[in-house]
Image 1 (cartoon, rainbow, N blue to C red):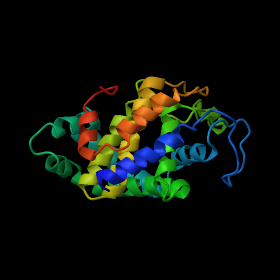
Image 2 (cartoon, rainbow, N blue to C red):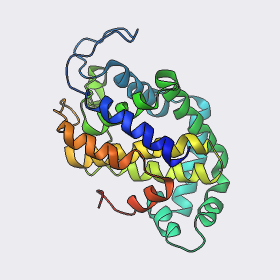
Image 3 (cartoon, helix red, strand yellow):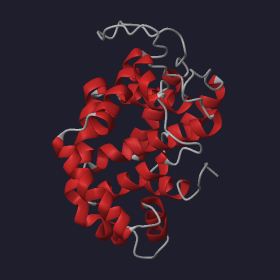
Length: 245
């Protein structure tokens, strides 16, 4: 995926993102209607199902991957994976040093890559514009899903205030890329992760009530900046914490 292709995705997505709203979810996607759901129906389902398979009901394979990955991080990056990535990314040996750091957990990283990419493909196979729009809705907090009432997390968005999960996700993605795990796919998606981070940093969405979304011109401007970003540029962007510089 070269920069020209990323620019094309970014330009096309700007128009799609502008249509993101908080109205009643439509069922023309072939998905069954959910009473009380607000925002894009397909995007709601994408994030709902990702939580199902990664958080609430992970398979044994995913549980086994967690059982290796998280103790490894606790032992080898006690200050946190993001801090370890940021430390190593500032050294002359980067990215080789980070690839060497992550190599012992290559297996779990492959498992998690397949888990997430299969879910993205289930709803947006071959549709990077649609997927980027789903990330935009996630970042702004405009997806309301009453099926998460029991967890008191009806809005599909990144947990935390500030939402530090984007930094952890970038750190995982860079480990996957340097180990050759679905490298080209994650190069595209990492830009969407940055885009959602920027949107959420401004929107600061409520996690229990649907949010109005940011002004369209502001979303367009952020799409133009973030979606064409190269991996090296994203590494520089994610040096900033907890919000973009």
